[in-house]
Each structure stands twice: as C-alpha cells, then as structure tokens.
Image (cartoon, rainbow, N blue to C red; front, side):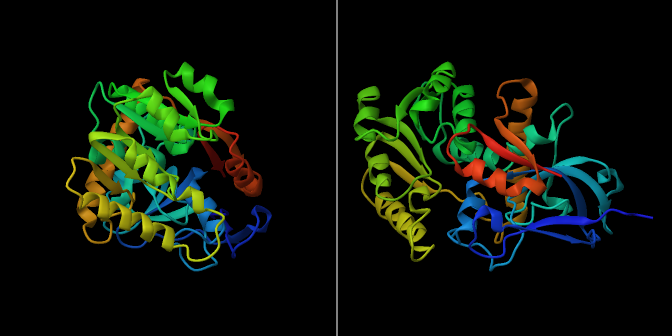
Length: 343
C-alpha cells in the first residue's frame, strides 16, 4: 500500500514569508502524456519573491503553489509515455507548482539530468541556466573577445551568466555590493559597486568605447543607462524589473514601460539592439519549438557543469518545512547563487 502523501507550499495572498502555508493531500495520478515527478530539489527564484508581493506581471490568482522549476525522479507515467522514463532523474520548468513533494508535468517538458550531478546542483541551472544561456547565445549572440556587463553578478542568474560568458571567451564587468567583490575578482570579473553614486560612469571608465552587451534585471530608470553603455552593434537584454519590486500600483506597468522602451530603441536608425527576455516566450504559440530549444539549451548547460567548465552556485539547502527561512535568505541579498528547497 502506498503511504506517500503530497506536501506542498501554498501562497495564500500577499503575505510575509511566515504566511506561506503547508498543505497535505494525495499524490497526483498522471493522465495521458503526463508524468509524476517526485521532487528532490526546487528553488527560490526572483519570480517567487515578486509573486509573494503580488508583483509578478502574469502570476496566477491567489492561492497557488509557487515554484518555477524543479529536479526529481519520475515516479509514475501516464498512458502514451514510454516506460523508459520511469525512474529517470529529470528537470522541468513549471512556472508554478514546483514547491511540492510530487509534481504533475507533461512528459514532453522534462529534460534528463546527467549522471553525477546532484539534484541541488542541477536545480540551480534549470530556470537560471536556461535564462543565462539563451540571453547570451540566442539574444546577444556573444563572441570571444567581447566585453559585457552583468548586473547582479552574484545572483542566481548573474552568477551563471558570468561563468557562461567567460566560457565563451567574453570579458565581464559585474555589478554587485562590495561584499561580493573579492569573490568576483577571483572569477576574473571586474566588479562595480551597484550602490555607487554613478554606476554607469564607473563602467565607462572600465570600457571607454562601450560594451558589447548589457544584461539588466533591474529595469526602472536605470535601463536608460544600460542602453547608453552599449558600443555600436551592442545588445541590451532586459529580463526583469527588480527596482520596482516594492512599488505600489500596477504590476504590469513596469513591464509595459520596458517593452515600450525596447520597441522605441529598436525603431531608431542605429546599430544597437534591445530585447526584453521572457524564458517562457513562445511556449503557448509554438510549443514544439519552445520545447526543442529548452531541451537543447539546458542540455548544453548541464554538459558544461558535468565537464567542470562551470560550477553550480548553491547558496543554501533547506527543507520545504523551512520555506519561510529559505525565502528570507533568498531575499536578503547576502548570498551568492540560489537557495534550494528539498523534500
């Protein structure tokens, strides 16, 4: 007799981390084309931090189970799913639902995790690794010898961006608080304190001719400085609006403004380019293409980790029952890499 039960974390509304709720239920049963993944690691990303405040631009209505991604073992398969998938360790991008002991996923959406990679290590590379890889290689199309700016170079996405850029032979200028500068220098990054009076001026001192790409998760008024830092032919990739996290008012307006700026800049007669990157773009309208790209790109990131070309930045591992502590740690700004939740 199966005595397992479903344990999941529910976000009931705009609450402090201690307001997150633990709910128990029955383990889901996979339907046709689906699998049940027994979660081994999930993570606290910036998306969940926004969702807790009701600030993520297209989050579902409260209450819901957060969790943008996960790594685990396929426990059960539905009709039409090859039996070879049962028992496999896989990763999945879920957007919501990952903060649970068992997660129902379409079989076509899972990506194999290579042998020798721990669940926590792999977890840090799912959402963050796909984001970093696609921004570097599908949007900015970086080349060896170029120079880029990575804002938040110590963060979950930023720390992987730094490593993948350097793996491609790219020089990195990284913004972070002063406490992280020594660690960034050890990685070969030229650090800039994001709390400085004029961050853009300090970056220009390091790259007087401009940079080839800027990766900006901050948004707000600073996005204009990011655009102006570009050399001819350079690319700005905006992928968030962290500066508006605690603002009141519309959660969609900051993203709409970013999209408007991107459109207006690309309409100018210049050689620079701007993108607003959304990791889930294309999933609804071109699902097969989206899945093919995701699998290819995450496989590349996992292979780089397996070879030792990059390292996983696990800031901490905490059990689901301590989700409030995990969220507070992730939001503290004191850690490098990603906070991971385990069963």
